[in-house]
Image (tube, rainbow, N blue to C red; front, side, top):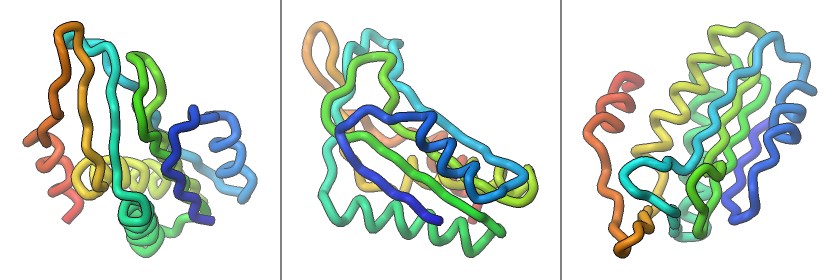
Length: 145
């Protein structure tokens, strides 16, 4: 089971985790990202190109399934404007054993940070700024090459 969603609606963690657990997996690993509250960020806005973004996320999920013996993958990413503390992304994987679930989940979030076509803008008290890619994200993704 591969589920990919790009949507402005809030992420329902319970629903996402329950769907992964239904497949009889021995291990389910998840990552939930939230809008940070540091550096004076009041909100984060994500833009994307519909169709292109979903295809990129599906390709990442398919690569994870090809690399690990997974029973399920869920990638849910929000778009639009979100305030500090709101969930922005959910990545979950299910496998027969914990190592495959944990490794594949880490792989997906690391690759998502570099391979998914999103444009991020931070809203601050004094205006906005576009978020540039971080070198640390590239380094984390390179580990999986």
